[in-house]
Image (cartoon, rainbow, N blue to C red):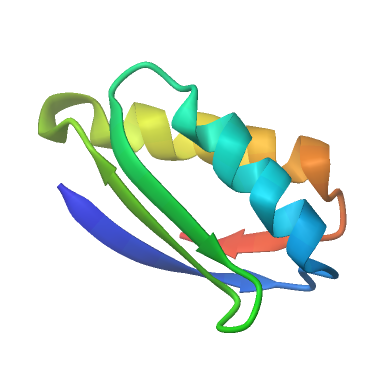
Length: 72
């Protein structure tokens, strides 16, 4: 399944790159792209575990950028 999420308060491109790297390491993620310019994260992951993977992705994004909100 592939879905795009809005990011709020993402402060810099470096943080976006760190988020992308952290989320890409989650088991079951096929592809992830985090864009600082558009303030969006596109996540492609296994259908049967998608909600679990999204929850873990949100945790990892918050760890990199505590002020960033992922609109699920």
